[in-house]
Image 1 (cartoon, rainbow, N blue to C red):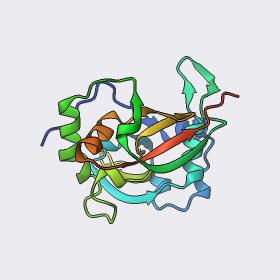
Image 2 (tube, rainbow, N blue to C red):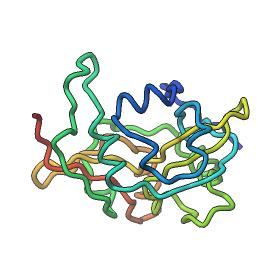
Image 3 (cartoon, helix red, strand yellow):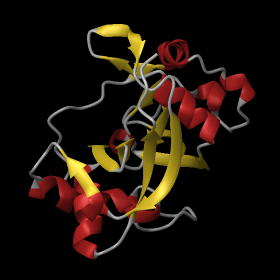
Image 4 (tube, rainbow, N blue to C red):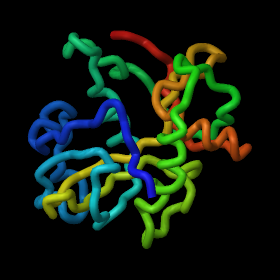
Length: 189
């Protein structure tokens, strides 16, 4: 199987920094193994999945609300927005990126669906909802990962794809809709 090769890789974030940046309090969330988590990593960096929970809308809104503009940590881009999880036809999306990498989408098809093998989640990425995942990293340490479906901004009647070009490409080629996070309306504070 091919490994997914990305141009940018999410650096692991110490759990304390993640909590400070998002304002989350994990004591309010009843999810096993929290006390053992040292870092937040990308799902592709997991070596073993221990538990999978569906992410609450409140948690999702909290982490999206913490996103800032590059170079301006005071500008929280999605602080005053609403989110919805919807099935969306990838053919109706506008994208800034007009290309996909064959290595990326074939690696997703061959590897990513194995992430939740042994768990009772849909076995195809088109129906995955936001998940909180606790697992082990390459050093056998407990880590937290987030799976988020494609992220889309809605501007009037236009839907702009921000993240998930390769997953949307796969869904479009298969002729199916894909669960997506739609952010609307886009209002700066």
